[in-house]
Image (cartoon, rainbow, N blue to C red; front, side):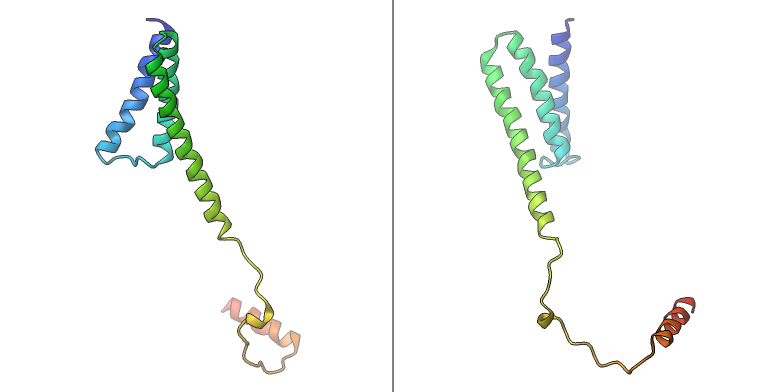
Length: 120
């Protein structure tokens, strides 16, 4: 068995196993693992198809790989957008709630109070 045959069989298994796991409900078709396995398996299958000059198979694997990469990029963009929405933003002072007035305390008294509360 040649190296290209091993690559083809490996690519077939790499594409088939995640498909079965999705069908059994053990893996999500939207997971990054599923998409990466499809991309890697598709690349190996495409290499085998190229070597055999099987152009319809090459074309299908190009589309298969492209779909996996497109899904991974879309997920990364969604993640970046979601992360951007969690950044802290400055709030103008006039929009902050007013604090109740505090009795005048000496700084040392306040420090003693905080230390005592932390110890207790």
